[in-house]
Image (cartoon, rainbow, N blue to C red; front, side, top):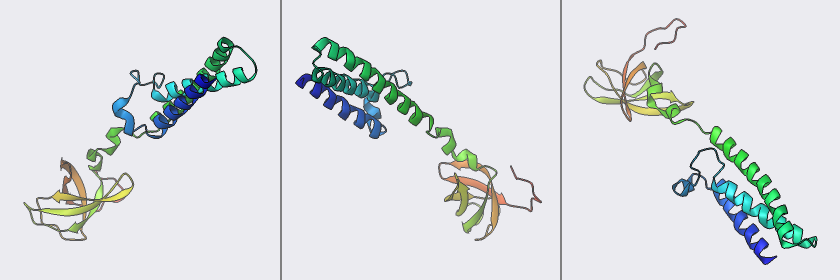
Length: 173
């Protein structure tokens, strides 16, 4: 009985650690397929089920083998739930390309710190639904408060802009 209790406790701790601290534990990620089947959370679920099922079986007066079989059945069920949660969490993540600054090309912004040609200023643009201020370069002088359009991304925090013109309902791109 003590063995089943220890197995359940270790499995439960593993299950919680891998589900809650998944991003922190990427260095010890054991899922080689990316499907969640061989993840730490599924292993924790399996061990928890084996331990709990074993305790239930022993409490009902069953032998160790039948208690272990019950534990395996319960463990497979808990592991399946952990795998489903793992896949749900993985599918809800935003792809890395969504965070690329290349998505700024064609968006409009407002100059927050003007500049002369050859020097840098600051422009505020809407990026992923939030305002973001990035450095800009331009071939023409731009004053604070002027509306601009991003034409290209020059670096990690630098864009090229041109003054925006009336679009008459069209999107500039």
